[in-house]
Length: 321
Image (cartoon, rainbow, N blue to C red; front, side):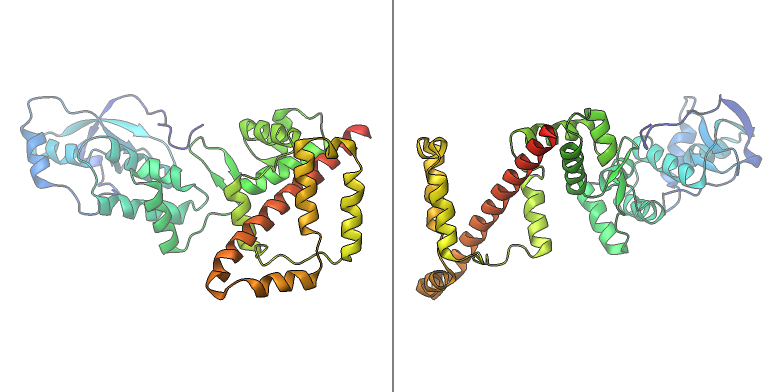
């Protein structure tokens, strides 16, 4: 069930106003006197208020309650709500955001801060949908109060998923390699991801693609420091060239356009550490940063290419066994 889905409420009943207590309202400034006056002077029946059954505190409808008092009423129509204190607060918040007098930005921000502290596992989007704020605003509030999301987060649909979708996609990749005939539901359950993401990972692996999205791969490389200047191969340059020569003898590579492109790229990079140093020294100092960024991009592309080949090899080996 969605975490923001409206719960079932009890039937409408008459409550004595003397038995009803003030709300723990997300409206930090209290009731607006002018709005109470307008409601009291209205010639229409006001909607029932919502009251917490456990505490008899008003969840939604304090302005209507005050208006009833101004009118001199002894009773008021109400519906009872059953839930935890947190559920009560969230319901009151949603009711104030969606109906009646809108909450101020300060009220909604304060409410988001309370939810972040109560439920840090809730995603920014989930909290934003409850408070009427932008998800970026919620993220800023989370950073300010120092309540980071945990390893899993609860989304709008109420389902728990890994905080990093990259981790889920990586886990799905490993599961598919070890269980090539597994269903999409089995993959999704094992990796803690959606069926749609499981399908995307599996189809990508069949095409030899990286299971991580480009932004996820870039973030992973930045976090791990793997975007440092590439280190030349430790193998002697003669062995590197011998590998290229062996590949060049394969007709499937030598006589195809893509194959010849690959051979040219491998041949270009089959140089020793001394040549790499000479290349670095030849770069004008005012272009050093620009060339460094280009080298990082090339190194990242080669790492992704190597990963694709390794996954294809593992999948082929798993299918043969």
